Image (spheres, rainbow, N blue to C red):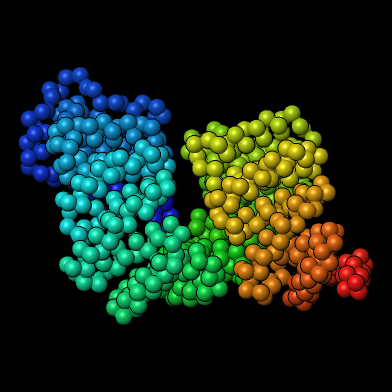
Length: 617
């Protein structure tokens, strides 16, 4: 399971929420006495909820359930040993994505602890934090806020400034309220923690951690200009203090993320690359640190339109992981999957397909045919075949993968919706309209379900449906989908995110094809301006960049804006020339040269003639 912290995603350790899992066995003597005084006879009927469905299959969950039931039989529901076992069992269910029974059992445990120890006891604060964490991890933020606020109010008093437990709960509460649009309410708490730690310990590691958390929140609130000087201060302090080099690398990555949020992408790339190179040199035999910063570096390079550089970084990471982790390791395979995504973005469909096929086969060999990861790999391969028009091959693979996801208990609803969307697009291509429409309705309904609609995979599926609908002549429905996806991507990812720019282009192309050039032109301008800002005026020869300026040129010329059209085509032609020169030995050279000839023909045709006519006047 993964939770979204203030500064991004981080792995959840079983000892992370609240106190250690065994801590209820060492609570205050007062509560032990109170609990002991309330021990019910073993034969007394129980009022605690007994989760029955789904039946546990994980060995640790089975053991936790047995320990809880045994404790209830021996000591009753209100004994400290029973409550400790209930807490452990609730966590095990939560780790196995059984949210409903986990929440029910943890809620019951909280009620009992509150009744036994009081509403403001440290023990109540601990269990309230546990319940809030499970709710937050399942993105039930409105429900998570109250128990987390209660836990923070209790433990910030009960724990000293250095204590990590209370500080983590502040982080959970911040994450929850940020999701609810009220993250700024927690800034005074961070200031108080920073002041307390600074007074007690000076600018040590604990104080710097609190400063970093405040900076992360400011970045989340889109107040990066306030966060940048704080992060620079942290980097300087970490550099001067020495110590674990990983602390300095983490501080530099935070700074890079802040710069990225401010649109300073080139500066961010420099830092990300330096951190990535430094992490590769760390004496870490597992190679796990080689996994961390390439993701951010690759994402930023892709945002700049530098997909080829992103592919190089991923390939280097992949080679290192194959040596340190082994070629069949799951992390190594995920990097291969990332390479395939970038190759698809570059238009290298044959290589992308080969890697996706290898990834699918390796997952199937390692995990068996009926495993969640295998079904997900299969649907991704089917999608690559969909993109290249190999519908006949894609249909049986996608059909089997979708069926497998539906029968897999641990499959996330968003993955099923994404697979349904891909299957719908394949069936439209195969002219099996009735079945395709049913799957399309299921997938589109998923955009408004309880899971956040900002999921990139599901939005990608929705964009694919729009394209298919457009190709089938269902223009009005297609436009509705194009606009829906663009609106969500703007809100979730920002105006310059690659997915947002892709949606801007898709809607603009649709409008141009329906002879609404005046509506399409501002969108093409927006896309081109974003690419200009990202590249710093040095046009990267990516296929998407060439397409953006070509579309702007055609549209502007068609509405009589010849100056703008000429400039756009000049940019497109320069990018094609650069792409051709950099790929002289590759198979794409012929294609690039053909495009260049096409643009030159345009220059000598209507656009250049119109431009000359306008200037003659």
